[in-house]
Length: 68
Image 1 (cartoon, one colour):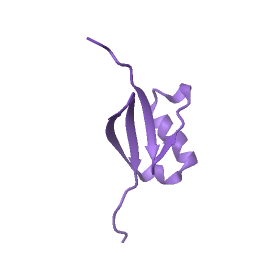
Image 2 (image 1 turned 90 degrees about the horizontal axis):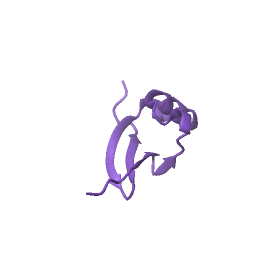
Image 3 (image 1 turned 60 degrees about the horizontal axis):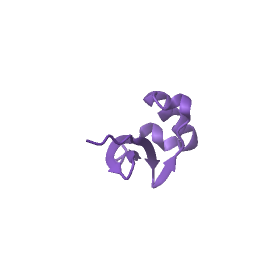
C-alpha cells in the first residue's frame, strides 16, 4: 500500500490561484482572499474537479443565469 499526499489547487478560469499557508485550512477566508484578486469568485460555484497528477483540483466556476 502506498499513501500519496495531495496538495489542493484552486483554479479560476483556467488560472491556478495562490494559496497562502495561513489560509490553507480556512475555506471561507481563502475564498475571500481569492475574491480580492477576482471579484466574480464571490458569486461563483465551488466544484470539485477531481485529482490531476499530485493535486486535488478545486474550481471556482462562474454562476451562469438570467437577470431580471
